[in-house]
Amino acid sequence: MTRALLRRYPVTPLVACVHNLSTDRGAELLGVTRSTMQRWARTPTPMIVEWEADKYAVRLGKHPGELWDNWFDISSPIKPNRVIKRR
Image 1: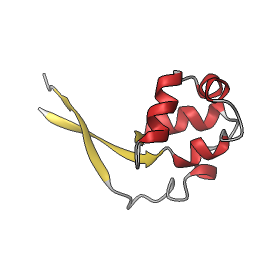
Image 2 (image 1 turned 180 degrees about the horizontal axis):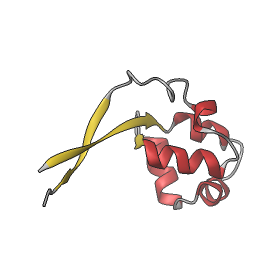
Image 3 (image 1 turned 90 degrees about the horizontal axis):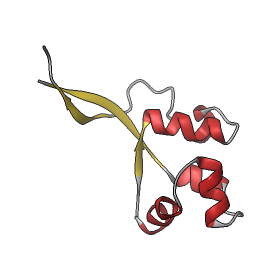
Image 4 (image 1 turned 90 degrees about the vertical axis):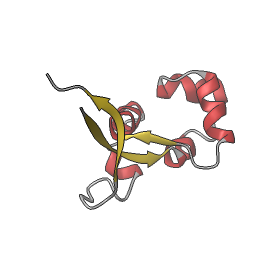
C-alpha cells in the first residue's frame, strides 16, 4: 500500500472572498454546507486538499493561483492523505 500525496491549502482566502455574504449564501456559492462554513470559521487554520481548493476557486470564478500564492510552487509540502491499495 502507498499513500496518496496531496498538497493542502488554507481556506482563509476562500472565506475572505465570501466574508461580506451571509453564511448561507457563502456556502451556496462554494457548494458546501452551512456547517462546513461555520467549522471553517471556528477552526484556527482549516486546510483543504488541492482538488477541493481548485473546485472552490473555480466556483468563485477564479483560478486557484489567484487565491493561493504558492499554487504553482512545486516545492510546497506534500502530505499523505489516504492509503491506496496496490493490486
